[in-house]
Length: 444
Image (cartoon, rainbow, N blue to C red; front, side, top):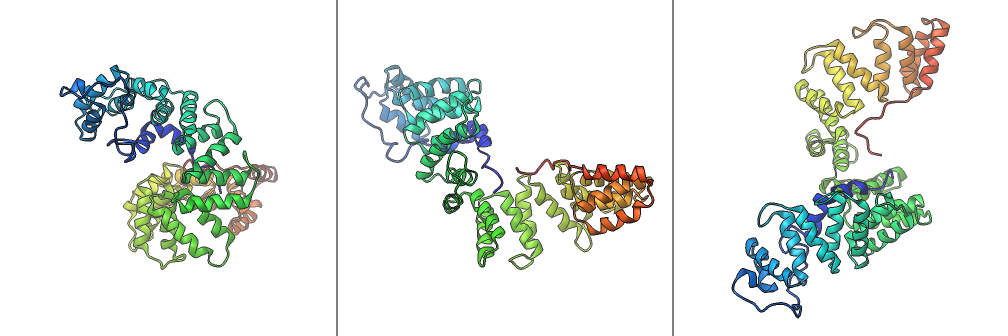
């Protein structure tokens, strides 16, 4: 298990996605069937009239449901002027979505705040969303925390999750793992799959709760059963690591579920399984389909996988391979850099270019690709148009050998005698201290 679900990213996106998730697609948005039925009017509500300005709450909400937003807006404005607090949320929704004129997030915040101050749980959540996303006002995660906490205390599961996320990261001004665990637990109790996943991580690490692998496994399985793709993926990885009888079959089923949900890493795994025939019959076309799905989401390993498929075809499709290798390489994928180097060295799909071949090869080697490190050692002995530099060759051969490449160890021993002792000792010491550059695409 590598890291928490990226809850901070969820909060950053909340201003765009969270609102839509909570409001359920903007048709009597955010209201359950029972909630969408108008409740009793306050004592001050006016009698129903034919003019838009004299609409009852029932008529205004019906106009909203029917998509007659100008009529609904006029009705809700009139109702709000008579202190019918039920109108405030609708006015916020109309303004935030631009349903009856230009979008006005500042005005939306004004109405959401009035509804939230009146105790409307949905408006409190939406105030948290707006504050977290910097919509209608300056971004303020501390204010978002306040509103999410208020809605959470009224029982809203998504608000519980968001409040817990802010306690977990400390982005709301207070980092409190105990509070994070409490609110994740509350949300999980309401069936919130992502909260279940985060509880699994917290129990795995002992953050805010006692470290307990059994409890971690329980929440991870529950999250996977509730359809959280990252939990399905993580559980599959854990099952593969355990290697017990039957685990491989279950892991494959979990990867497939996560992939079918659109989870790019799982889609890549499915592509890799079909490409290598692991647990399934080898099927290059199926591999390409899964890689394509993940690549469209910007996942570099899948781009690299597509590059390999096109490069290894008979005859090779160098142009297509170059496109995918280049996309992945520009995102920092070491294997793709190596593949691109080979295309330039051989002139497959590109004009042969030893200089570019060497540049991409070095980039791959610097990011820890052991085969690229071996090839850099060979190139430094005068291959690929590079000037002969035995000391540099010794450095790269030692780096690759330390990464477990037996061929590199043999080359290192052969080169050592060609380098003056002091220069060779320096090259070997530098190799021992070598730390690969991070591959920018990699998850934590």
